Image: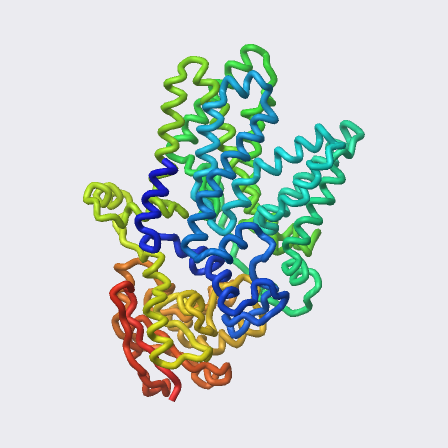
Length: 560
């Protein structure tokens, strides 16, 4: 299966369909931005999007994954990280199970450990945290080893280095939190603090890897948009439904893909397993039950957080953690579900190894070929010219055609545009397209996507686009969130669907505060479609650009 994916990605390369949302329009293009202006190793250089953002607010240069992105061409680095995460995830999973299973059990069920480990490593999680997700079992293994061998120095070295593979806000805080809880438990039960040195070392590692982020959170006095976040709480019925969805499927950043197969057979397994254990008077606090309780707990934390129950408590008791998304605890369920599945297939294999193997194969097929989340392989197959594949995927998702990597960024087209207009770093905005397309191509943008830019600039952007946002009923969203500082159009959010791209290229009026645009030194408007009210805006059309390798039709306007 890995070889098949490698062949497909090598064949399509930039013609592969790579998920845009929170990927190409976010972290991936941040690295390219820093590469464009040589700010990757700088502490606080000015980066040319959102009217100038400090380097402090962008991803770490000590992260192994970010270093691969930085030193390789974007698409090559992206797929290198993808295949590495499969091998790292499988290796980490095997290490952990080797450590927690006794030798005989590990050897007896090694094939099923490999199969369920492969499932875990293949899950379509957020690419920006690929390594962070698949190394959850690695840090668990390192901590178990350190606990068993507290005098072995190499264990502490690896614990200290681990944060270079992880991500502080999405995973690190919860790893440190879980370790702290275990320290309290071990102290009370065993009068032991064996993992205390490891606790301080992993915190030190995260502080070094994310030193800019730590500075921004704790030492900077510049207000950011997070100071005014006011996301509306879900109503209880909707949130309970969300809790169930997260329980069985995960969220878009950490998909589990358990709903259709793993969840129902796991529930049958747990029911039968517990009835059998109860009849034999065995303890009900056995590993499968404990794992499922932890899965449910992690998902329930998301319910409490998004219903604002947990959020409000944290805001009052520990204000410094008020911005931490505790719903991300369910990201750890990617590992827990597949360890639970391992227990299931081991149980089934005692009756029939063939049946256990079939369970594994079915779930592997579901993970590899389901066109959901960040499954670029399945989404690329949807684009293929194979009529059978098109028919299969169209039955799942009627809108099968999305922009490829090359089509989304359209580097050839924008190099041509920049050369033709003699572009020299002037501030610009994107209309009817995502601003990351411009900033990736080294065009300075007043718009963009970031979760903690300056609050003062959010107010500037609001003034710039207020009338346009009101016309498209987006002002409220921007006021209580504001992470995506985009100029809305008839589609509300710029699409990456080829069908919608074509429809968006029809003419449309743009309601922009041009006095504010000029005060921000705005010069160009790049629009994927004609702007109909150029006279009232005081802008002129320079030219219209298109290219065979792009789906965009770019109208370039400048201030008179």
